[in-house]
Structures are given as structure tokens and as C-alpha cells.
Amino acid sequence: MLAHEDPAIMARATALHARAVVFDGLSTCNWSRTIFEEMKAGGVTCVNAASVLWEDLRGGLDNISDWRRMLAENADLLRPIRTVADIHAAKREGRTGISIGWQNTSPIEDRLQDIGIFKDLGIGIMQLTYNTQNYSGAGYLELTDSGLTGFGREVVHEMNRAGVLCDLSHVGEKTSFDTIAWSRQPCAISHVLPRALHDVPRNKTDALLKACAEAGGIIGISLFAPGLRAGNDATVEDYIDAMEHVIALVGEDHVGLGADFSLDHPRPGPYQNYASRDKGNARNLTEFATAKINKPHGIQRIHEMPHITAAMVRRGWSDDLIVKLLGSNWLRLLERVWGG
Image (cartoon, rainbow, N blue to C red; front, side):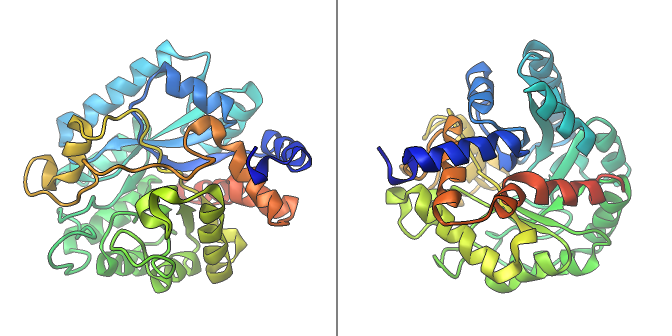
């Protein structure tokens, strides 16, 4: 039995987890009935279900069509999400809400007007760039981050107007600072870990995390093992250490979950290769497509999400704080941004 599975701790954690709205700021699994059943078992109320990486307009539309099919075929387990009221309804119904998200704005191509169209089709969260340069700015792996472009400024303001949350998780440092300063609405860093605890490029500096929070945004703490100090040897306690660092840095009202589950995509495999190459098929950007990557021990599959709550209880955190971290902080941000 893991330390955080002490019966008394698990009893309190189970009650808290059942009461809370549990919002996952981003996961990008090989979506299937098995995954949807795991989300129910793990008490996940809603997930930013991100799939788009490098796709163009046609790929973005195909992604929406795929989700419409999956939502219809699994209506007993899933509920489409457009509003925060929908998330609360999913909680009451015992279903998992699906907020369709993208990890790139590539499907809008050079058409600002398509942002509002995609919002109407259910895309509630868009990451501005994915890893490298697009029309709006630089990703964190671009050779030179020259910042938010002129077109990118218009993209951000159109996202603000349409009620689409701007995500900065894979965005370059300068482009991220520029976006936070330019945006009329708070941004999010939906799935990230602090560079102060492990200095790797994918992690974010304390200065950027603070800037995001000071503008009203949310930092979603990721389970991505290469970003944790212990790597593949990490446990759920290492994850809570990262969360604790960010809470101390930005305050308890600006931190949430951003699990970054990518379950059941073979590694190596077509999806991971596509994710790791510039624009999907050019230069290789990372070793993640072929490297062995585990999730932290104790939280390796979605059905184990209550172990995060148990680890928070073990730290002596209050019920109010835990409920904020599990989801209510995300709901407050989405309530503000989704209205446009």
C-alpha cells in the first residue's frame, strides 16, 4: 500500500474528490471507450480534451467531427461542454464533460474570422503555438523567439472577443510574455511544471508563471515525468512538490490540474512521431517520441486521479484549498473568459 493510501487519508480524500468539480486542464489521449470509463472511475468532471497539434483547417474540422461521433456513441459517459453551467451539469449527471481544445491555432490558418466559427463549434481553449513558429508567434523550441507577431495580436484579441481561452503551455518565453501583456483577458498555462525545480526547456520560469497569475490566469500542473526532478522515478509526492512550489509563488487561487495524460498512444508510434517533428513531418524536435516516459508512481492512469487528492490531504492542506486546486480555480477563469 502506498503511503498516501492510508485508510483515514483515503476516506477524507474520497469524500472530497466526490464533492469537488475535478477539471483537468489538458489531456491528449488516444480517445476510446476505455479512456472514457477511466475518466468516470477517476472522478473527472471535465477535461480540456486536446488533439490538434499541427493540423490545418481540414484537420481542425475533422477533429470536431471525430468528437461529435465519440460524444454521440458514448453519451452515457460523456457530455459536450460549451459553458461552465455545462460543467456543473456534467457533475450532477455523473458524466465527464468534454471541452474540445487545441494545442495550436494552425487550423485557423490566416483567417481571423474562423476563430469565432470554431468557438461556435465547441472549441473553448486554443494554445497559441505548438513548439515552433506559426503565424502568431514562436513555440518554446523555435530557434529564435521574436515574440507575438502583429497578426498574433489580432488573433489574441479575436480569441478574447469570441470567448476562447488562450493557452501558453508550449509557447516561447518572449511570445508568452507579450501575449499576457497584450491580452484583454487572462491566459492559462494549462499543463506545465516549474523550471526552478527542474531546468529543462519545456518547463516555465518563475517569472512567467507569476506574470500569468498576476494577469488573472491559471497554472495547470502537469504529470509529465521529464519535467519532474525524479523523471521516470517520480511519485505522486513529487507532483505535489511541484504544485506546492507554484502555490507559494503565485497564490492558491491561480493553480489547478493539467494532467497531460497521453494514454494509449504507442511510443514510438505515428501520433508521437507526428507530435515530435516540426509541423508533423520536418526536423525532429524532441526525443519524446521514442523515449521511455512514465507517469509518476501512484498516478499513472486516469482512474488513479483520487490519489492526487489523497496526497493533498496528506500534506495537511485544507478542504477549501483542495477544492480550489481540483477545479474551482479553473471554473472561475472559464466563467470569466468563455463569455467573451
